[in-house]
Amino acid sequence: MTSNADYTSEYFAIMDSLDGDVAGRRAACDYMQGSTAIVHHQVVASTFVPRLFDRETRKAMKETAETAHRILVKVIEHYLADPEYRRAFDFDPRLEELILLPRGYDSVLPFARVDTFFDEDDLRVRFCEFNADGSSGMNENREITASIAQSETYKEFARRHRVEGCELFEPWVDAFLDIYATYDRRVENPRIAICDYLENGVVDEFHVFAELFRKRGVECVVADVRELSFDGEALRDKEGGRIDAIWRRCVTNDVIDHWDESQQLIEAVRAEKVALIGSFAGHIVHDKQIFKALFDERTTAFLDADEVSFIEQTVPLTAFLDESHVNLPQIRENRCEWIIKPTDHYGADDVYAGESVTQEMWERLIDRFANGRAGHPFIVQRYIRPYKTETLPPDTGIDGLADSEVRREPALYNNLNGLYLYDGEFAGVFSRLGPLPTISKDMQGMTAATIWVD
Image (cartoon, rainbow, N blue to C red; front, side, top):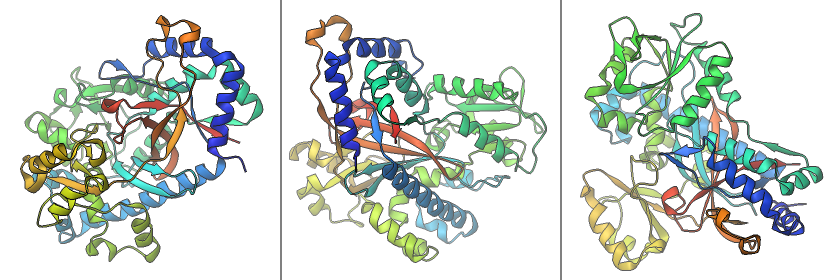
């Protein structure tokens, strides 16, 4: 059977037969520089070599993602219904207030991306983190796929195989509108807003989605949470337009940071005058405490045996970085076994893998973050070594190189696979790679197109 690695080797062989397909790489780089794949005012780093996944990989990813979603929905439902169960989490009282606001529609976790370490040899999966409505990457995947699709390497590979990209836009528009159709106070011809604190958001991606809603005949705007106003009956944007439904892209800790400025939105949700898709209950999934809570006996009590087994196989051991929860000397002495993270940040902020730092630095990090010294809680998690893939680093600066100077030799990069779920159904993959133990944009990370093969 042909493996993903075999497909990648074939891809490189085709490229080599085209003398490196330097023209295709230059064109792809030029495309990206003019693209909308922009995060925080910069075009994202990408690779010319897509991640090529076979049928078995797709099946394993789908089963893993959808099983995780079912479990996470159960956790959210129990948190909402059972005050005693809420004590399995340590949340700011304002977060608990937001989580308990009324929802009014059927879907418990409308949009999610579960980030995984996927071993492509044995199809085993380990979770890195769970993300809800603040998740992005869909537009990166779309633009990077478009950048390579016209290259001779891709065309030749596509002649040899049946290939399919990940369509991550239209299915979400479908899912959003279907979810809104179950809203208790739904209206005909709703006006939708995609909302975030726009300096933090992937705004170009928001506008792509807004245009797709408009093509369906549904008015859609992009709005900053702080510019919303509520008069007791209607939530309005800064132009005064009524908003009937919101796709919440703002992560909940940003709401806390802008608490006073966010009260108009919060009051409208509390008064059930707007459909907030997804609800603030998605924070239960976003907060990394979820990894600890999944092993809590208060959680396993309402899961079946298969679900408990799934958690044991896929969720790395996780605990608060606190001497009342872990053996801190053991954590100090075995840094390569561990990674530390804040419970409630995003973008790989203050995430440190022990094997990526010196022992002296590791000791300083433990002293800095343990026992709540940073002012907010940190977790420590068993470090999972990512699966490595042959790829090409980003073609940054290729315009200044002669053809003979363009790198053609593969490099081994670590993989992080983000599995998208639209109302519980597997939708596709965000393929992120990096040369360092922590895979993120700030750690020389890059994105690859995701292609299903045969």
